[in-house]
Length: 65
Ligand SMILES: [Zn+2]
Image (cartoon, rainbow, N blue to C red; front, side, top):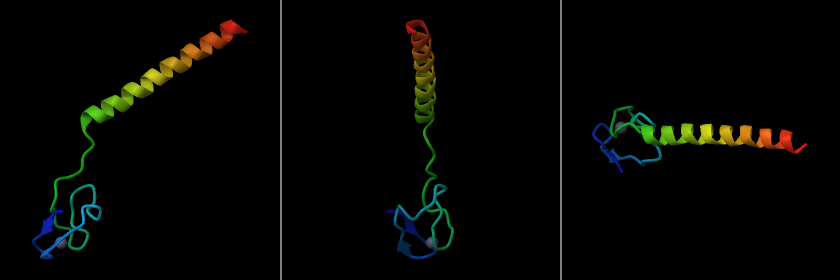
């Protein structure tokens, strides 16, 4: 739970925005919550894999007809 100097109180982690600003005064009190690059890579890789599987399925259906 991050402490805000300006407000002299603790702020709920859920109330702080993605840039780490205090919800009351707007001072940066926590590091920004950035999406880690490896998570983005995983998402992209999953989409590419699913697209590949979808194409494979389509080809299989065409041949099965
Ligand atoms: Zn504050």
